[in-house]
Image 1 (cartoon, rainbow, N blue to C red):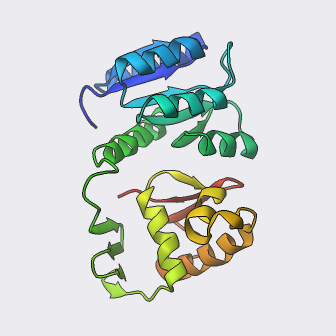
Image 2 (tube, rainbow, N blue to C red; image 1 turned 180 degrees about the horizontal axis):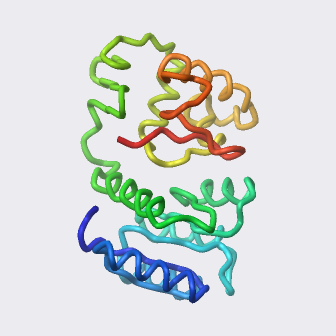
Length: 231
């Protein structure tokens, strides 16, 4: 945890705000609150939060539009917290600037873990030095040597597998949508070729997971995308 980090909650439901207020303050975070999209955008611009918790069902604007506007205003991590659990809602929010998505109801430990991941990512700015070595569980990736190890043993990846793994590592701990992965790995004209992802994710799991049928490192967000376990 980063003591004192400022979290902006944009949520119109009083009961949920009380829950979040107690949880965040009880874990050492500073808190700013907004009940409407208009107030939330003003707080984001004026308070410079490190993390924003955004409800999609706001009274004065659609939350996906708010996520898009927030992304233009701030580099803060945007974690959507919403009762909307449909795949298209998750994809829309993630494609329009959100970094992560939690469907209500959720537990405090899971949300706190997502916030910690967001703050760790923020501690290494995009324009900072590139990561040289990434480790998570038995996985170790040395980007200087272009070497991938699992449990200390070298793993051979094809160029496409390596590119896909790299895209997931850059977003470790966050769900990455099918569309974004297809753009990064295969190009902008491959948006609808989701079978590419299924094939190559299966290959990566076969090479990197202890049990590819029950992946613990490369997990699926059904209908939305994939997530690489954060260190």
